[in-house]
Structure formats: C-alpha cells, structure tokens
Length: 155
View (tube, rainbow, N blue to C red):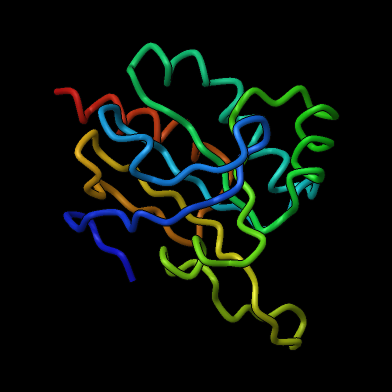
C-alpha cells in the first residue's frame, strides 16, 4: 500500500486523444490522481462533477487532475459528454494502475464479496512523491479537501 513520502509508481494507462500516458508524464506540477469504481454511477458522477467544478481552481494552483477507473475509453467519452466533465479520465482496463496503487480490493455488498476499485485519491507532488493519500473516500466535500491540500503544497 502506497504511503505519503514514497514515489508514485510509474505505470501506464490509456488516455482518450493521446493514446497512452504514464505517471512520469505529469512530473513538474502536482497531480491529483483520483480512482473511482464506475463511470456514470451516482457517487462516481458526483465526484467527477465536483472535481470538474473546481478544475479552474486546481489549474490556477498549478495542479493537474486525472481520474482513473477500469472502464473503457469509449465509456469515459460517453460519461464525460453526458455530464460535461472537463477532468481527464484515464482507462485502466487491465488493472495495472489500480494494482500498483493498491486500490483493487475485495469489497462486500449485501454479503456478496467481489473485487473492485476502492474510491481513493493520491496527491502527488511535482517530483513524483506521494504527498497525501485519501482512502475509502466519502464524496461529499472531498474535492474541496483535496484542493486545500494541493494548495498547501505550494506553501
């Protein structure tokens, strides 16, 4: 499990218009990497909308935003278009990014156990070190808390 102070794993993921990317592509500016379970579900939509609403504030603070799920790029395109999302969404269909960040976990819903993405956010500094980690995220107020922490990186 990744802890603050450790270097973020330099794993690759699929990106819509550019094909692919990796964490090291984001060095030089802080990065908020938020993992969410599924496109177009209520909590995930709310989280993506909250980050989209604050995207200008993150940009003004020099912070990049990247959402990650195991949904396909096509699913991301539809999700972003339907909700007018402006945050970049990366696809991790093979699960390598989720595994590297330790967010692919056993979940339990009404007694049924299954594997899925734990909603989690990683604030990565400009040098690629993890500055802060939020696990088992509750969506309400989360984007604002991440923005405050991201702004504090510059202090």
